Amino acid sequence: MIPPMQAYLEHEGFRVYPNVDGNDYFDLVARRGRELGLVELKRSLAGPAFGQALRRRAWGDWVGVALGSGPGARRLATERNGRLSSVVGIWWVHGETAELLRAPTVVPTADVPRPERVQLHAWLDAIDRGWIPPGTRMEGLGGTLRRLSLGRGYREWTVEEAADGPARQR
Image (cartoon, rainbow, N blue to C red):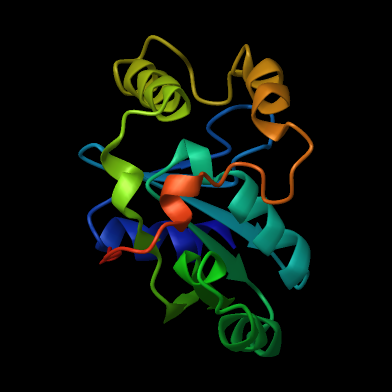
């Protein structure tokens, strides 16, 4: 599933990093300038993939899910459309094609330099400069994940992101 999603995102002008953290926490990270997008990949488990995308929200400007099941992807796009969940992009990956079913939304607070985004940008910059070989394990990731969780559902959402206001389409 990585090659079709990578091709899709590269066509949109992103540089794509599969398993950028070496821990298998981030499936795909896409970067275009300072914009960061995160995509979770699953063959058919729509619910778990959706939850993973939401949990990774603090790290990027937008998140998405790419599924290998057409019915699962379409169901996810129509059933998960609440105020918080409707910002998650959804793709159906079939064969060598990635089909966009719902575009991810960049939320208004994406411009706020959250520590997690700063950390991920620094990691990507180091990879781009050749200072860190691809596949190297990102140190400190576990501690950051524990700090973010605090035992809450979809725990990386913030009150500001849930506030009413204009959301921007990517």
